[in-house]
Length: 350
Image (cartoon, rainbow, N blue to C red; front, top):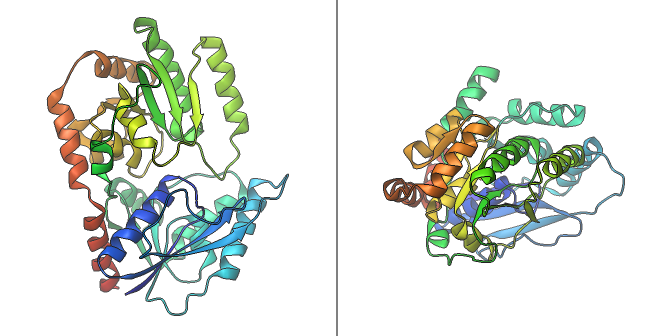
């Protein structure tokens, strides 16, 4: 089967990680797979090496100083649309709203649903939901949102995870004892709540650091980041913000954490959290239906900053080998090969 998977970036965001891993697994099952994406800021390849069995088409997309989010979204759609030729593919599968707007007919994976205020982005999001002729969601919780909001029935195919890569990672000792989160500083990631939770946690466990990795994004969160920095100064919290972390460095960083915090207010699945479970790192997440669905008893849950702080304190002070074993087993069951087989069944059913 000739399959085109489309993404919007070469950089390490959840949808991009998903696209590459799925492409490699499909190619491993003997399919002819091409990944199309935009090369932002002069990028000519992805953030990590990609199996040579997967063809790559990186469309040049240079930065424009001063361009706002709406303009960048419209230019992204136009650039990918101008470059992409659907001829020769049996399946065209878009992984985000930008790539879904760039093609006329496609399968769409809806990773999560947002409520955007930027007009161009809100319109992009809406078209990318209603225009595709078939839909996949990575969790039943998102599929239920899609059904309730748009009357669209989606097939649920959970994400995979490279469990062995994290399970066998050495533990980083560079930052002492630390709570880690991955995803940067932005509203959807619940960064302000995590900061408040960390301040409460540190009052009883002063030797624990907060380490924040990731943060590569298309959007402009400077105002939110400024609020976060002001609050960090008020709390005298002094978190360590690493920014994007190299692909080869991430497993050791995750494995070395005393706990992994994932307080997102909106997620479709939570791959980074599943990677933490694969590494045997205690996981604390926000109490959302999607996380209850995906992680079950393998995680600890908190609905607000005080509850998150309490669950983090438990994770750091109360050993729970049964929960740790459950987390590792859960991660091991979510393979990309299984996800790829489910995708092939879905494609054939079309």
